[in-house]
Image (spheres, protein in one colour):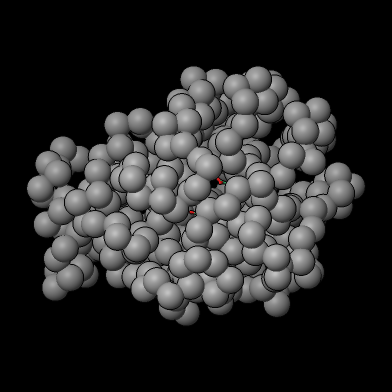
Length: 334
Ligand code: SAM
């Protein structure tokens, strides 16, 4: 079942008519391989400062209209402690590429957070091998960095000054260092073809991701792509479902971007192959300022509200909240 050819994948991605069958099939595979537990990962968006200029992203350095912040170490540790006290067994530290967080500073932060009995995921972009190694030695368990697209021409147009091969090599370093590897793509980018999405899925399978995040591209008004079409929830759901068929036992999040396009986006995803949700546990004004795309859900809510709201929705569809670290194949602590 997991050995689909490129042509078969393309057909599944194109087949709007039979989308609900595809999602049902992915849901059955999810149930068989990873069960009914939905793992919650508390997402801390600790800095919106970024040295890069990704043309799709609201945090790009050329967006001068965005008020910038980074949390102090103290604030970050306090947020992490609160999230751990709320019961999250995994925390995800995500930011723009903000070099205020030097190797030493990150290591200190990781060591302190790990005292809370949580698995820790980093999502802070491209760094040097020695940084990844030091973070891993300090206790980081997982690393999440989307390849975004495997169409290299498209990647280089969308990410000026960045290099696809380098991003790929970073993912390989992360894997070699023994992190659980998370990657993924955006769906609906301008000039992205169905064929290239099929290649993306085959790439994620080939590099052996432990987690794959697939989300719709949502045009941001303060970026070069403000007039692009994007917003393709259904193609994103089909892509996610095919990912589940290709890699039956990995972790797949129901992404926030899906919920931002439809009030039931994450539930649709959980019923179509996903088994992870990443509620935002960032406090106050920072939630609004971490604006990757417009219409991001839950920016006015508190972490506690988000936790209980998504918890209730998960129970309502007959699923359970995961009580473990929720590693791929039950691994972790690594
Ligand atoms: N800087 C880190 C990195 O590059 O991996 C992590 C933060 S980055 C802002 C997180 C993800 O947001 C990106 O990998 C990208 O897929 C997603 N993203 C950015 N802009 C988006 C948009 N307009 N619509 C949907 N997703 C977007």
